[in-house]
Length: 182
Image 1: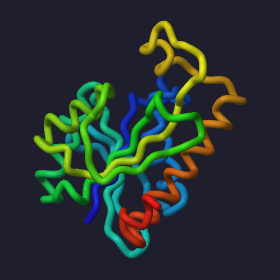
Image 2 (image 1 turned 90 degrees about the vertical axis):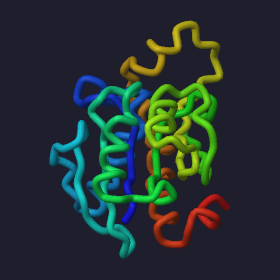
Image 3 (image 1 turned 45 degrees about the horizontal axis):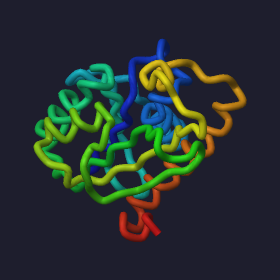
């Protein structure tokens, strides 16, 4: 079983913001694989189903970004999911809009949601997909930048990364992370 976690802030208030790329990927997976993500438990909204013959739980923590790990650890413990089967998807301002990066493990960097997940799981040994939201411009107020609504034109560019992240999740489940990274 895999726990596929999208990081973000509660919808609809934070829909179509850069910081909700993880939620957007979960929403697309939910739609594509007909998995309703509507049940509430352990500080999150989730749904369970099958993707590429793998049992999955799709999770959107409802703790706000900075406390995401509190929800993730509860699911991991309850369902006895090993960290190598916890796939976390989140936004990254250092990656160009529309691009993604896949890693098998690693530190949280400056992302507060990932800091929470790493802290609560007590490990950085889990795969992740980072969805680019980067700007070539210098950003004065990072918090306002990541939580402010984007216009339709920018969201179309962000959707490219969301689509690539959905494909990456499917590839990881189907052929493994080493192949998906290539």
